Length: 248
Image (cartoon, rainbow, N blue to C red; front, side, top):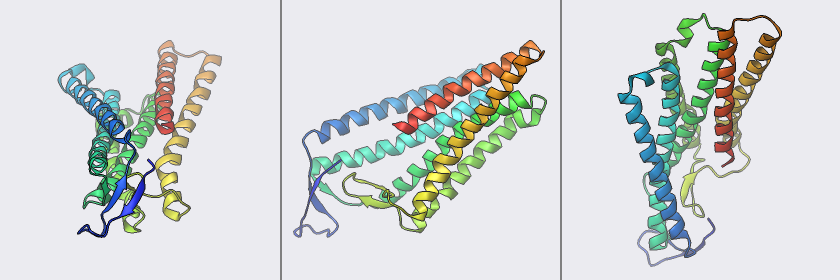
C-alpha cells in the first residue's frame, strides 16, 4: 500500500514516524482480518473432522492435512501481520517492532511448507501409480518422515534471509520481508520456494499423462488404469489450486 511518511523529531523513538494513510486502508484491514479469521476457523474445523473420523486416517488425507497445516500456519502469521498493520493505520505511525523480522522469517518458512506439501502429494501420486508394489514408499511412516523432513528444511532454507539481513521492514507495506531486487538471496528464494516445487509438480504429472496414454494403448488391468486416472485427476485438481495460489 502506498503511504506518505513524515518523520517526527518530537517522538521519543527515533525509529517512529507519522504515516498518513488513505481512509479506506482501515476498512480493508478489517475485511482482510475477517477473511483470515474465517480461513483459520475452516482449518480448525477440518483438523477436528480428520481427528474424530477414523476413515480420514489414511496416507492421502495425512498429506492433505499437512498442506492444510502449512496453510493454517501461514494464515496465522498473516493474521498477526494484519493486526499490526491495522494498529499502525489507526495510530498513523509506523515502527519496526521486535518480532517483525521473526514474522517475516516465518512467512517464508510457511510458504516453503505449503508449496512442498503439494510437491509431496504429487510424489505420492507418482509412487502409487508407477510403483504400486513399493509398499514401504507408500507407508504412513515413510510419508510422515518426509513431512517432518519438509518442516525441518523449511526452517533451514529460510535462514539466509536473516543471516544476510535481507529481511527488512518495508514502510509502504508495513511488513518485514525481502525487498524484490536483484541479489543472490532473491534468486535463491525464487529457486527453492517456487521453481523447484512448481517444475517438480509439472514434471511428475507430465510423466503420469504419458504413463496413462501408454496404458491405454496396451492391455492392462482395469483397476490399475482406474487408479492411474484417479491420481492424475486429483493431481490436476491440486495443480490448479497450487497455480491459482501462486498467482494470487
